[in-house]
Amino acid sequence: MHESTHSYVPERGHGLKHDPFNAIVGPRPIGWISTRNASGHLNLAPYSFFNAFNYTPPIIGFSSIGYKDTVRNIEETGEFVWNLVTRPLAEAMNQTCAAVGPEVNEFELAGLTPLTSQVVTVPRVLESPVTFECRCTQVLQLQGVSGEKVPSWLVLGEVVAVHIAQRLLKDGVFDTAGAEIVLRGGGPADYFTVGREQLFHMFRPT
Image 1 (cartoon, rainbow, N blue to C red):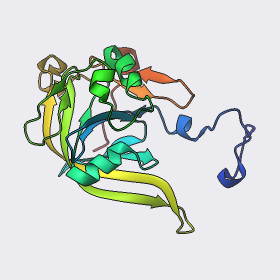
Image 2 (cartoon, helix red, strand yellow; image 1 turned 120 degrees about the horizontal axis):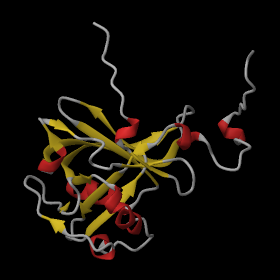
Image 3 (cartoon, helix red, strand yellow; image 1 turned 30 degrees about the vertical axis):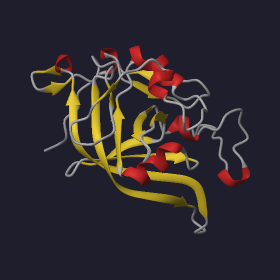
Image 4 (cartoon, one colour; image 1 turned 45 degrees about the vertical axis):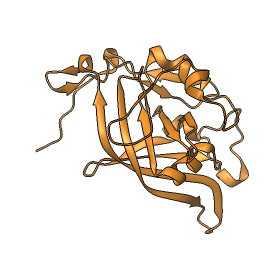
């Protein structure tokens, strides 16, 4: 027997209490992006539309809904750093969501420590156990099927340096569960963590 289904056409509205789209495509890793503008001011902001897109070279990307300071800074300097959000850093990450002016240093706002990177000029978050130094490869304004531009920008960058806390490397394998990675859910305040109870193994068929 076929189960009852809620169907909708997005441009006509979903008819629900909360848009289910980003709850279905989730939970998603968080793009906690640090940047520096041409004048040297630092910025640190989280983006819930984030992921990895290529192995060689390693390419990551995030989408900014609106042309925000992060996108402007990356276009000015060509560099950014991704910082892993873990459960102990969740509240600090949330502080960097605040809608503040470009003159405000979110590192200071959230009580975080900028750490000099090895390849790029943008600092890393010292407290984050995993960071990717990146150089921008593309900034694309998104568009709908009609060809009309939408006010969202996809930023892609090649990872040029990786830093991983030694405690998270177990026999040469990254300990995803041990890192307590924070993921963004779809509700107005929903987040998740990855724990060992969610772990299962499934190898590709040969």
